[in-house]
Length: 392
Ligand SMILES: Cc1cc2nc3c(=O)[nH]c(=O)nc-3n(C[C@H](O)[C@H](O)[C@H](O)COP(=O)(O)OP(=O)(O)OC[C@H]3O[C@@H](n4cnc5c(N)ncnc54)[C@H](O)[C@@H]3O)c2cc1C
Image (cartoon, rainbow, N blue to C red):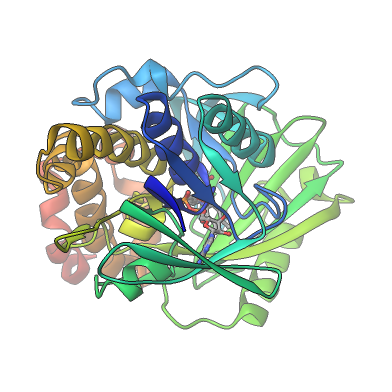
């Protein structure tokens, strides 16, 4: 049976990054991915923070430039502002340094980096089970085989099989989302939009993210837990055809592709590692719940926890440091912004469920406060939200 120091399950941004950091330190690392084609289909709005914004949000992150300088051919569009609107109009715009990327290219760039640093890779390969002695059961085109390892990095997304097989809790709260990539739009290309539109899409919020060549990712995320996809589709279509602020720019646009998926919104899991005498397990990216709950951004958390896990792999295997160090490290580097993001969601959600009150709030709130929330800071005024629910 082939033996590896580390087996990484899932070749999304989290897994590729973990495999890169683990293999570049000389650990024999295997990266397995169930899909044949890495990064396809894309299930992402493809909006990313620039390095400048990352430094504002993840203040305790060492060397952010290692993860957040994207290759030129991956960046689709520079974005300078965020517009926030309701059913009728845009209420305010906030300066914000973002960009849209091509996720398939980005995932493949990360996959190549992992390979070039020495990681072994297997696509069309499904992780199905593991034993307490570190034996891993993999399936490739109807063929089952085993490998052995000292450390498993679960980077297998929101419904992580690695978490399930190791009795680690899994993401309990998640939002379903639906997104179209539209072509031939006439929207400004350096502005991203967020609409809380109670008339056309009452159950969720809509985003519009510009890409290159007059294309836009138009999506709808639901703050309800068991929504039907047909309802999402009707509401997204309604928004596109009717919203007064954008309908003329979206008129005549054609749907190039459709995607749907789930976004974890419960914050990082309570426990993100486990160990037996012979094998250790850590969860990273969506598998560990490392998503900003109030806006659904998960790629930054995936990259950061991927790097931490890859580095801890070396400390654990070569220097016999405890695997619990992984959790201590992610708490220090990403804990505060991600837990704040969850708090913000929980403060806003009760108001958001009453759309009229939410619109009143939007029209009265100082834009500086909203800006702070996007940087995952919690202004003291947010603590008054439960009161506003009664007053407004
Ligand atoms: C519609 C939508 C829009 C989004 N928009 C944004 C956005 O604009 N910006 C942002 O930052 N985030 C966004 N997100 C979230 C973001 O896409 C995820 O947080 C991110 O992909 C997480 O990366 P990951 O590597 O943890 O997991 P994934 O990208 O989900 O990768 C997991 C990989 O594991 C593989 N896998 C799963 N099970 C197994 C198994 N048993 N064996 C082998 N392989 C397995 C899967 O095939 C997959 O390739 C969005 C999500 C959705 C659904």
